[in-house]
Length: 254
Ligand code: ATP
Image (cartoon, rainbow, N blue to C red; front, side, top):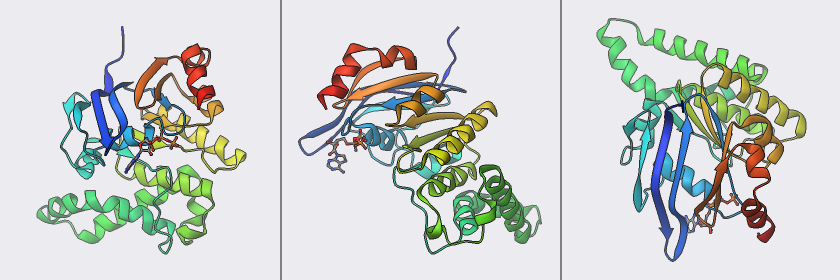
């Protein structure tokens, strides 16, 4: 029996002027899986992420998250439903501390909780304390707690990637779309990031991961989808994909 998809997108297209970045693409991410999205440079992967999470508006297509249509919903509303994305170049605020970056990620949710807690007569200070405790506990679990009071700008490339994942965790996601978690990261930290993803997946979190590092894809993913020139080229297990002549040709051709 196949596992119900937590994310399902069909017929997604996006053009920029005359460039067809994504054409009639589809994807399914089974709940509880680590699914990979690969393809040569310029294949449309990051654009596809933007379309799935509505950072970009598709020209056509449908996206369902957890059985619910989400096209047209703004990214913060999608995050509240449980799907959040990270970026190829981490969007950390360099002049704020690591902990402050974490607290900003909680702000959207806090807005709603503020009124709930107000009406319950709870002090707002309690909410702030809860957020701080949650942020510190997540920083502990991703190995960044020692850096909590450092400027985010002082983090290495790999530590910024960890902070991006940590910030995503502040929203209590069910699915994280990770854009190139290993890019620009030293090998020791790549291993740390991979074991963190594995650990979070064991706890029930699903992932869709764009990555050029095939070792990462092979070691983490249950299933892999391949895009080339904006189209679906193949999907299958990592082993199937690695030996698919169409896929090899697309990479060699690029
Ligand atoms: P990479 O692996 O190099 O990050 P990618 O597979 O993520 O590439 P995209 O960044 O999605 O590919 O780009 C797909 C195509 O769309 C490319 O030809 C790119 O130049 C084009 N493109 C992406 N964003 C824009 C934009 N905002 N305006 C114009 N063209 C764009």
